Amino acid sequence: MKAIVNLLFFTLLLISFTAQSDNMRPASLTIESIDETNFSVVWKVPAKGNKRLKLDLVFDNSVSRTKPKQVNFFNNAYIETWTINRDAGLLGISFMVAGLSKSSTDVLVRIIDSNNKTVTTVLNADKPSYSLAKQASEQTTLTYITLGIEHILVGFDHLLFITCLIFISTTRKKLLLTITGFTVAHSITLIMAATGVVSIAIVPVEAVIALSIVFLAIEIAKKNKASLSFKYPVLVSSSFGLLHGFGFASVLAEIGLPKDEKIIALLYFNVGVELGQLIFIAALALLFVLTKWLYPPLKVQNLARIISYFSGSIAMIWLINRLALF
Image (cartoon, rainbow, N blue to C red; front, side):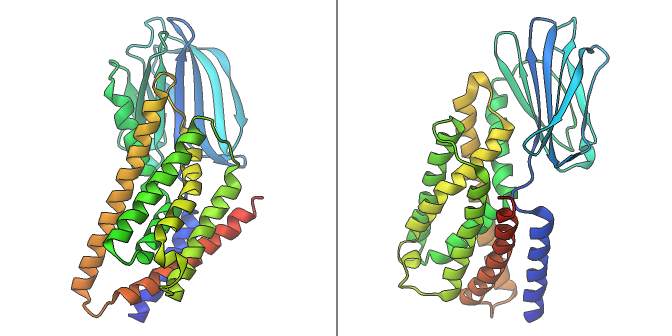
């Protein structure tokens, strides 16, 4: 058992160094009509310093460039902007992202026609190319639900926080209230930040998110059932949930929202986050049942101790790294 614990501890520490929590940012492509045959292009790729992901946008032969590319690095992104011409208009335009088939990054595509209508889709390793055959109203809904699910499932800090919430909720009723409180709280700040009602610097927010995990890890390790965290876990989940909402909003700000369907896209992104959250909780429950079946001596108390040490150690690494960005 000790060997397994040590192996899991090493694995999670390795994940913390290589993944660095919530850094799996998508690339994005926006094609917007200037008139019926001319279009502006904004190609945005995640970057660190002056190094970017090796992803390149390639149009079909029916597209010609009318202005040279302008290139710059801004806010952890490599950005190219230029204009193109296509005599046949937007319908039928085709392009691919070179290098995407070997990458785990998604590319969010927005195509805006002259009537300000937006077609939205996502490219990935399984779908590195796209051709605009027709507008589909369900594309925005499906795209932003998918992005929400993907974001929560690769947001390791959010997942660790949810895991810790489970272990301070001593009954099913408390767990339901705790997760509901977290959902309501982060939904409020996500909507407020995404619509511009509230603006807050993301670096200190991400540092406090890491600190929230450290706090919960300590509470789980202490096992003081009389503490405020164990007696009223919904207060903890909703308080820190407000900050997690700003974290979700920072990712959504990089993804962007379609002009004509901003509210719809925002709501469905949040729906995707909640679905991803439920998927993760269900997976944890299944994992615990399977582990208990394979190793009957395992007790919830022992598992809680492991989770507290793992979560606290990883979150401390994130906290130190994020404080270094101030």
